[in-house]
Image (cartoon, rainbow, N blue to C red):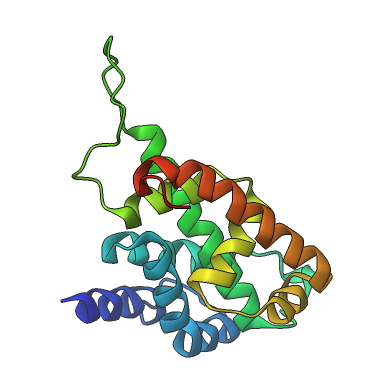
Length: 181
């Protein structure tokens, strides 16, 4: 069913004569849609959210100003766009969720929340650049030099951001992990 949904989305956008899609976008979609979907799925942990991210990323690419020229590294651009759009989805889920306030605050988190969801929420609370770097490093599996090249920053800066982000997430996740760090 997942593949059918992606195929029907592709058909409706790329094959509808009323919709004009540049050849470059069609080629980018055909060659990179699985990368964008996998990246989004790894970050969100949800197939429906990954589909939304996939559509969002390519719609943003379609709306991109043509005067800005061709993408230098489409794979890197689309991976970063997928990470950022996925974090946006997670953040929007957090703002949509309402939790009734009570006089008592539980000492430990609710047991029904999975560690993956908790980690996703913690990452979504980070500032955009550290969240992006963390996701590229630990979710996408890129090395520090690859991240530095993709983002146009130094490897030292990547290492510092990764270190600080891990420390921050450790503090946030400590209640969920017990006394372990």
